[in-house]
Image (cartoon, rainbow, N blue to C red; front, top):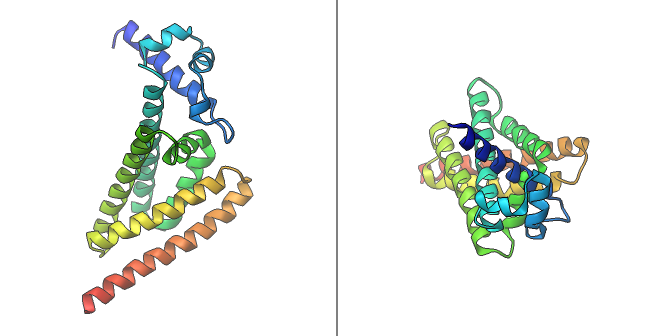
Length: 204
């Protein structure tokens, strides 16, 4: 990569980071202005268009990046699981660490999942589908569940985890630890239920 290409990528990265930094519970992506983002990134507003067509393209890039970050983190968690440890506990702790370390990344996914933009909702739902598919694939290879039950378990787990993530954004570190323990129990109940259904299906 040449010097000019490196500088362009650096500026593009600065714009994405600037937009993430300005998100909060009261200030969603739809409230961001191009000028605000450009100013925090340290560039002129007109230079924004060298990197993104408009704010929507920037936002969709952020959704894609947020989903990828979360999936990559959970893949690392599964690698830790392969070395020994509780699948549910390690996955839950990893997710809570993600929310604590990157609150605005998760906040974007959460807010835009039910936002006004159909394009953003579709983008978030696509990332969620990727997440469910990867978890389903993991479950079908690491348990005795068939794909149907593994998919149902993955979808149910995702609902609980996302709801917990929303709660984790606004509580203390001690509150997150207590929340994590509750989530672990809920996920264990779902896993046990899926396994029971599998056994019942086999008997029938």
